[in-house]
Image (cartoon, rainbow, N blue to C red):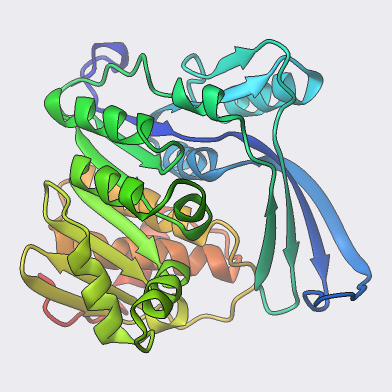
Length: 316
C-alpha cells in the first residue's frame, strides 16, 4: 500500500500528456476533401490523462507520469491535471521542448480520426524512470516507448503492483510488434482493440473476426495471463489463461468514441482494485466505455447498474 495516500493504493498512469484540439464535423474528410467545422474545443488529452481523469472522478488516488514542454501549453496542462485532483509531480517539464498537440476529428456518428504530434524518443525514454509503486498499487501504461514501457511495467510487478498495458496501432506502427510483445510480457494484463486486430488480421491474411481476435489474444503473453480485445460495437473478447471470455457491447447510440479505450482501461483497473473478479471487471469496464461513448453523465453507481445489462459467456 502507498504511504503517500495514507495506506490506500495509488494508480500510476504513464504515457504522453498532450494538448487536444477537437473538431466536430458532419463527416470525416477523405483524400483531397474539405469539410466544415460544426463545433470545436480544446482540452488536456493523451491516454494516461484520459485514464487518470476517469479514475480521479471515481475517487481513486492517481498519479500521472509524463513530459511536457517548458511553454504556456505545458504549464496549462499541468494546471488542468492538478485541478482534476491528479498528482502530476512525476510529469517532467522538458526545457526547449514544444508540448505535443493532437488534432481529433469527430463525425456526427461519434467516429473519429486522430492526427498525432509525436514526442521525441529521448523524452519518451525517460517517462516512468523514477516510478516507485508500492505493493498493492496499480500501474497503467500505453506503449509510449520500445524499451521504457517494458522496463516500467517490470519494475511495477517486481514491487508487487498490478501492471496493465494498452497496445494501440499508432504506437505499434512506431515501435514495432516486437516492442508490443515485450511490453505485453512485462504486464499482468494486456488491452488492445479492433484497430490492432485489423492490422494483425491483414498481416496474417485472415478475416478480422472473433477467431482472429482470439488468435491475437494468444500471441500476447502477459505474466498475469489476461488479455482484452475491445471490438467496439462487437463487444469484448478476453483471455484469462486458457479460458475464452466474450461479452456484448452496451447497447447505446454513439456520440463520441474518443477515449473509449482509455475509459475501458480505467474501468477495468478501478474494478480490479475494488476486488472484482476478472469477468465482473470486464463487464464494469465495458459499461464504463459504453456510457462514455454515449456521452451520458455518469458515476460509478451508474456503471454498476449498466453492467447488469451485460451477459457474458465464459466470464465469472
